[in-house]
Length: 361
Length: 242
Image (cartoon, rainbow over all chains, first blue to last red; front, side, top):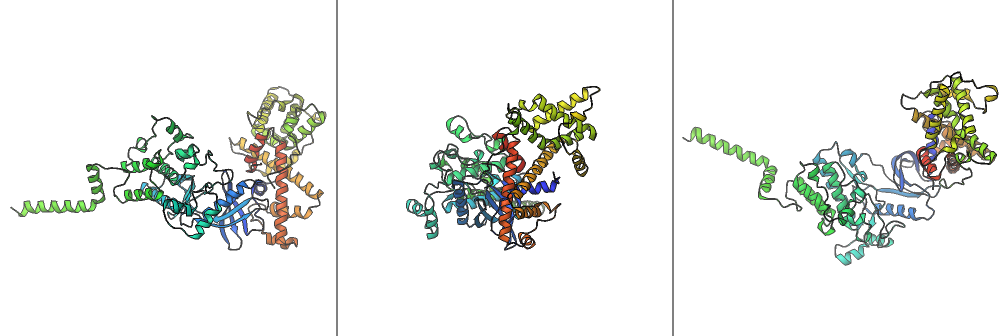
C-alpha cells in the first residue's frame, strides 16, 4: 500500500469535499465556511482573473426544493443593489446537480468578532449602516428573517455587509403593497420579479405556516412561535434590536432557544434590560434597544429606517423618539452636545468677573 | 452524484460478532486493514515500545480481539469506535506489561501479514506528535489509513473498468503535486494528456465522484451505525452524506 503524505491526504480530502463546478469559469481554491444550506468556497474567476466567493448547496437535492430556495436567494440578492449587500455575479450548477452562485469576495470580520475591539461609537455607526441596508431591503418588500451579528461583515475600511439572505422573504408583490398600503410606486421590473414568487414567499419546504426559521437568540416572538403569517419588517426590527443588545452588552438577549415565546406565555417574566448587565449604558440607548425588541409588533419601530434615525439622533446628541427625557437629562444632553459653547461662555463669564474685580472698582 | 452511494459494504464492526465465520473473518480483515498501522504507530509512540515489541503487541492485540470478541462489546451510542478501540488497546498493552516474563510471540503466533517495515519507514518520515496530542495523532493516522485504502481500491476499480486515463489524470492532478506546489491548471493537463479541457473537467469529475463513493463506502464499513457513519463522514471528510 502506497504511503500517503499529509499533503496528499489533505488534497484527497479537499477533492472529496470540493464541488466540481462543471464547465464554469470558476476554479475552487479553498473552503471559507459552511452553513446549514450551503458551503462557501473561495474561487478564482478564470476569465476575469479575480477572486470570488462561491456558495454551493451542501447536498444533491433530488426534490429540487433546496435548489429552488438557493436560486431564490440569488434572485433576491440580485434585486438588492446596495453597497451593504453583497452582489451576486453568477448562478450555475455543479456537475453533480447542485446549485451554486458566485458572489463578491468579502474581506473583513464578522460583527460578533469585532465587538470586543471596536469602540462603542464605531459599533453604533456600524449598527446604523446595518439598519440602513435592512431598510433598503424593506423598501423592496424583502425581509431578511435571520439577522444576527454572525451574518454581518465589517470590512477594513468600516464598510458593512449584510450576508446570508437564504431565508429572506418577499412580503407581497410590490403592486399589491402599493395598492393596499399606498406606500410608493415601484418599477415594472420589481413587479415582475415579485410576481414570480408566491405571495407568501414560500421557498419550497421552508416558510409554511408554523415553520420556525431563524436563529433563536435573535428571533422575534412571532417568528419564534412559527406564526409566519405575522412576519413583516418589524420582525427584522426585533432582530436588529437584539443585535443592538448584543453590541451594548456583549451577549445576545437570551441564550435559551425560545425566550420570546416564554415571555409571551408567562406575563410576569420580563426580559433582562441592557442596563442590568451594564449600568453604564445610556438610558436613551437602552430605550432604543427595548423599543426595537418590544414583544408586540405595534410597540416596535415601524421599520429599520426609523430605528436607524433614532440611533443617528443619539450619535448626534439629539433626543431620541424612544425615550422621554426629564429636564435635567435634557440639560445634561444639551450641555454634552454644546460642550465647546458652554466652555466658551464660562470662560467669557470668568473673564468678565476678573475684569470687574481688577479694573471695575 | 457524490452523496448517493450504493452501500455495498456492511459494517465490519457489526460483522465481527456474526455467527457466520466467513463474514466474521472478512469483518476482522477489514478492521485490521484500516487500523493496524495507526495501532502500531500508537504503541510505538504512546507506549514508547521498540519496533520489535510493537510488532508483537499489534499482532497480539488483533489476535486477542478476534479470540475474545473485544469488538462485539462496542456500543456506538457511547463513543466512537476508535475511542473504544484505543481503550481496549491501552488495556491490552497494560496487561501485557504487567504479565511478567511474557512469552514472546513468534513463529506460529503471527497471524497477520502486515508491513511493519513500511510502517517504520513512515514513522521515520513523520514528525512525532507533541506531548498530549496522541489522540489527534491517532485520528490523523486513521484518516491516512482510510485514504490509503480508498486510493488502492480506487486504482484497482478504475483499471478494472478500463478508465486508465481517468486514473492517470486524477493521480497527476492530485498525487504528483506534492508539498505546497500549486495544482496544475486544467489547460496544462489537457495539453499534457492530449485531450480537451472539457474532457479534463469531466474525467476529473468522474474520478472525484468515484473516489468519494469509495471512501464513503470504506467509512461505512468501519462504523457501526448510520449515525456514527454520518458523524465520521463529517469529521473526517467534511461531507454530509444523504
